[in-house]
Figure (cartoon, rainbow, N blue to C red):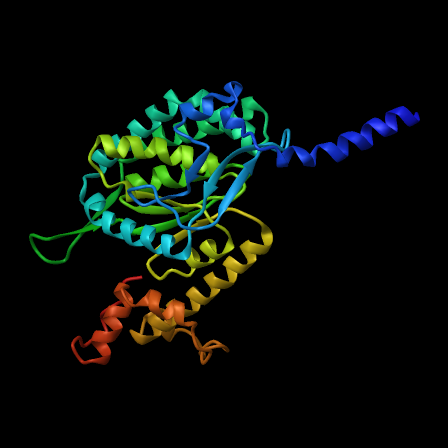
Length: 347
């Protein structure tokens, strides 16, 4: 390799990181005008709980293609997360009361809103995440297709009718909304993974708090603005689809939040293993609760599990406070409800 070529490569490597220090942002460049078409500004709030406000540190989103700053996002603090979770929980009551087909109509409108922003949103994904434009657009299309799927699902949510031994009676099984769920997504699919979870959760009557990757915050803000536009148009609380951009502390708080009835996580193996440990604690808790009701399944065990005496963490005990099983356990302990041999716990 010639000295001239070596010198050129070394110079290029030394200059590329310096691009990060340039004061001009790509959002101010007319070439990237599609960013403003998505409602983005040079400085953006990364927390949405029905209104946009954030009190955490400011992070800069870089384009991996050229190392330049696209724009800034103010992340959420733990107090901001608490505001999001509370607002979403409050919004759940009215959202769950809506008929499923009506919720499906809202999701259909979200799909149409995504179609209108398909090109600029795909360009943002390509710019911020780094995948080629056709792949980025295809990812947005996946969200749109899941909205179409959810629309059909909203009119076909199943239930079962069972025969009863009592004359003139039938037994009806009806699936109810879970409530508040958490969605944690990774940088490599900043739109699709959220869409898969959110669209299905919405038609089922659930509300969500979304914690996206802090390396693709602008995509999360843009997607949430699109969803917000539909919710506002239909006079629905924006906290039905809350957003909290942040770091590891936000993710850990979300996972351990006793109000979260379900958490969907997409990310690294290391973090996933930590999630698995949390789930194993939850399984242990459920087994203990089954034992409280003298469940027939428990009676078939030859002996209690080896870790029966291990105390549960405080955050998990708090999560139990509002569950049906914990409520029944308290009633039994206080003598308010006497369980017979024929009764069975609802699992």
